[in-house]
Image (cartoon, rainbow, N blue to C red; front, side):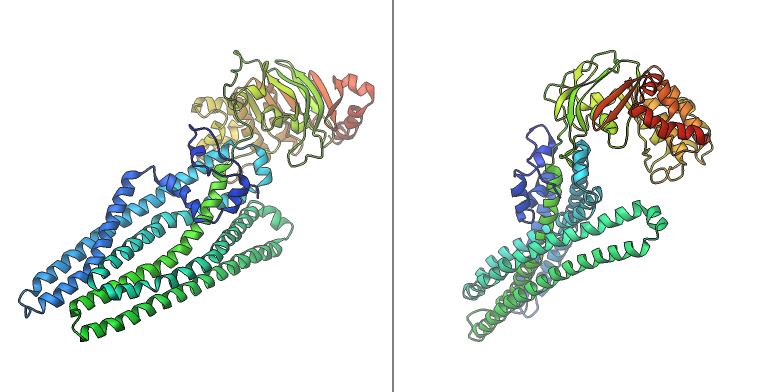
Amino acid sequence: MNLASPPVESSNDPIGELAPDSSKESAKDSQSTLGNLSLIGRFAARYPGHIAMAALALLAAAAATLAIPSGFKLVIDRGFAANGGDIARYFRYLMMVVIILALATATRFYYVSWLGERVVADIRAAVHRNLLTLAPRFFEENRPSEIASRLTSDTTVIEQIVGTTISVALRNLVMGIGGVGYLFTLAPKLTGMLLLGIPFIIIPIVTLGRRVRALSRTSQDRIADVGSIISETLGAMKIVQAFGQEERESARFGEAVDSAFLTARRRIRLRAIMTAVIISLVFGAITGVMWEGALDVAAGRISGGSIAAFVMTGGLVAGAFGALTEVYGDLLRGAGAAGRIAELLAEIPEIKAPANPRPLPLPAEGRLVFDHVDFRYPTRPEVKALDDFSLAVQPGELVAIVGPSGAGKSTLFQLAQRFYDPNAGTMSLDGVPLRDADPGAIRNRIAMVPQETVIFGASARDNLRYGRWTATDEELWIAAEAANAATFLRALPQGLDTFMGEGGARLSGGQRQRLAIARALLRDAPLLLLDEATSALDAESEQLVQRALERLMQDRTTIVIAHRLATVRAADRIIVMDHGRIVEQGDHDTLVAKDGLYARLARLQFEGVSAGA
């Protein structure tokens, strides 16, 4: 994975403010250190009122817990000493402490749980916002399923940290420190003996904690692998079943699950050992101190109530420090999760608007110019996708792009939408270099109909409105009529409110294409990029889609990656590409007469289709 980068520098960017101040290397080195928890603190700091209420409730609960031994001391030393005459007074005091403890604990639980849910929601939203700004290169180098796992499993760990672990850690820390202070007031000598055992507790925490930290990070990685395999397999279930690979995928998933389990087992075993060692040391120290205390009571040096309070408080202190050892392991696990989330927040977009973007001129024309463009995909730097490519597409012109697979046709569309920047040369839209303009403004002037239609798991209405979210129902139906999609949309069980299924599973290929065309019509952009997608359709669907495309191309600048003879013949110009260069251009008849690459492609592709028809 390559999920770390320098932080965003803009002081006005909330995501940038939350990015860790580290380089790629240092971010990777510190993924599982407790310093990563500062990410959680930055999000939680947005809600100071809730933090204050949780802190007050925590202090009250800790104080009430420590007041219980004091109450029993009063009952024993004063209540019993008065022959039971005033014992009810001290039990009323104890009951009041219990009520305060109950209310404070409930208040603390509410506020820390609220903070946990709110912080996780904010983190997920911030990461998602940042992901939406990243260029396609990031998602080529990093699996989306892995990213999705971070947004689910890792944020769930963070929710536990904020909603439970940190609160428990602070409560036990307050109780431990407060308890030690109270113990000094009861029996300084015994308390001093008790504190001598602390170094023997800290050493195992530090030593074993380092190993727990490494295993916590590895465990999160294995869980992410499990999530990635689930996402990948479910997304390709038809292929898995069509090729009879159920057993293989089941075995692959089982291996990932077993790997996650084995890593988790090592982590749990180490934490169990750490807990056993520390608790043995803590309670061993307490037992020795209590032994000495019993001798002091027998000698009359301290009262029975004092030793009772000392025993109870010592137990609370031991429990508090013992709980801190378990909490420490959880904090390390949360630090690993926070580090992985911080990497996503630290990613900065490679393609972004300049500080002072040039506005595109009005009215929009749709003139697109490639001027001596060289381009290599970041994931394939050894191959030139475009090599000294120059092309000027005039407003209203229909240009067909043809060529063999790998010629660079789709790359033109990627660069036109500024998903990438060329390595050399310039590109401009309506006279403005793309690097000088806001990418959002560029894409707002482009409508795209891809070969592989993307249909979201939402209603038909929302899928159409992706072209223009403010479109009215009347405008949706006008676009659907023009795209030959209205008939099947009206036949859906709930009309435009019908859920389309994952990836448009409820629609045929032709219906998905017509829905995509209607979406592009709603966009009403001056420049249309059309990866013609009729080659995989049956004859009837192809005719419906072709007529819809003809309506879509009217009065627009259109660049079409052509697969059909009808589209090519209708083009004002045909651009023939090979190895990232223009090797021929002209109209159909001229290129056929040249008997070059286009003529060969025409014979192989177009004449064969015509003969088949």
